Image 1 (cartoon, rainbow, N blue to C red):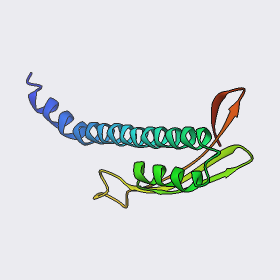
Image 2 (spheres, rainbow, N blue to C red):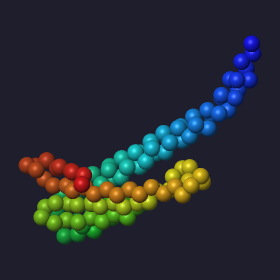
Image 3 (cartoon, rainbow, N blue to C red):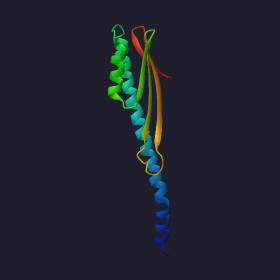
Length: 123
């Protein structure tokens, strides 16, 4: 009995499913990479802001540092020895030619000094 035809049909039917799973894995990996890049930029900005709280223009310098490292909308607030950062961004997906592929990223972090150590929390 010859099973070559059955194997070919099964391969042709399962190939789109397999390719879609691979595309989803790549897309989720890409989103995690972008989110980690934003986290690193926020950590740098909060560290700078907390180390230079005595400067007169620390808010504008911290905002410029954050704007230089990310492409989304960002807002820095400094009050009561606490630096807060909010990032909002829309990222187009790699496979957006199939459908409207925009992803919303909303991140809010707060940094403060705790006995000489800088603590950063996600909200």
